[in-house]
Length: 284
Length: 292
Image (cartoon, rainbow over all chains, first blue to last red; front, side, top):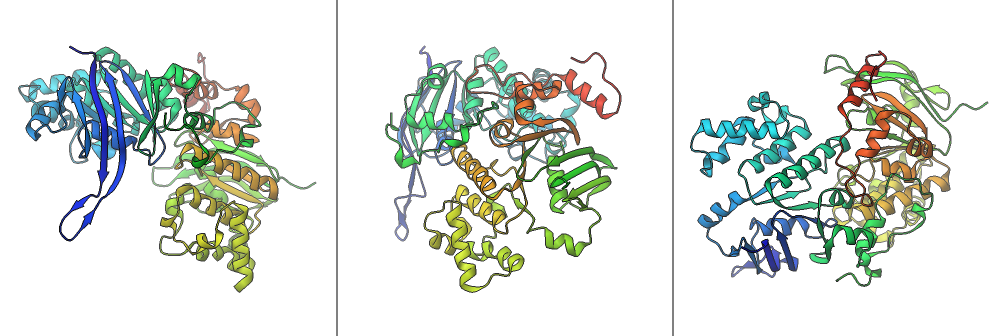
């Protein structure tokens, strides 16, 4: 058994490509040959600004968008061209937590249905009663009271909904979880709760995680290692400890310097952010 | 003695819909000419309500139940509506949160940028066009002619926000209310927008009310800050005092709860429940006992 759980090589994703007789288009390439590998139990940050391709990369890792070149191996198995049946089986082990739980939780289902349906679908629980037992236990683990089981998503607060999103992913006891901007709409005190929960759960369950965020400070709080992306490429990769203390790329340095920390620094506003074309050394 | 530019005294408001839940509780603050004050707090703190009250755009579901909202010594709450309308958009202007939705997608930048100049300053024709070019140059937009002919969707978020800043400063206001103006932007774009706002504010001597949830932004941009929780002022003072020597336990916990790239492990400690209990007790008007 190898230490690497998820391994992607030379990933390319192109949107809007057409082959038809009437409409031919080469499309827009949004990922240009990206390599990512994630070890078992490791939390990896993927950071970048809008248009960096971080969300596309996350989706490609789970094969939620078509990959035009490259390969993805999950637990030693090449899933780049795995059949839909095969992917269904793999998907139980690869879960996703979305940015906006309101959009990812079916508004017409109670929390009970939202939590128990995947257990029955994937055959993790043999019947409704067993599924409910597991749902109860997971709910307690994410510190939500049992009475939320009969509520609908809109009746919960943003922080509570995000806990449900986490609970739903954790219930299936996956090996890998993709978390895409999951705290970006939350207040700082709620954000700290969600990050703490995610960090504890990943440790308890030995989860590997890809944590996508635009916020380097959030990445620093939860990740072991980080990939910095820009315009569909990985600009820099390494352990957080090294990257934050001593970034190897000018672009990473620029991203770090642009973060306003809550410290008094009358000169912070004096220095201009260099434009992209002024950067050298941004491709590794 | 000239009164402060803005003086809010014991302002209270409540939500009509939610059975009279208070949204502002006895809020007082002052703003001097040329001062940049941050209004900071988590959702439901009332920071946007104060901003909207100043701009006269409170939704009908919120009713002012007491207090004064003085601008240059005159109470905006009792001012005749004609005078008020003339003042808003000229003496008090807004930089909105979302540059995406604040601009009309069907009109060119020039048409939208010049609305205010036409109506509030009476400019016409070449003078109007020349002023529009000048405004875009001031917010450091290259090729202002091309940008004026553009529609919002043809421009980046940062570019749109520059245009909205130009529009807010165009009539020469005494007060600009900025409502989370950089929340939707990338961090590198945010920094350039903050630099621009501060420069415009300094050049024109404009006072700014800066609504934000980000204490980091406050630390870098604001001279003074008012921190709110559930419609109540929890702490206020110069930014340096509040950030470096916070007095209230909530302020301290809020600063500690925010993650920082230079401190691994920070950002995982929520505001302790005991502090929320203390806050609730303070809201109820009783002294908290036994809270840290």
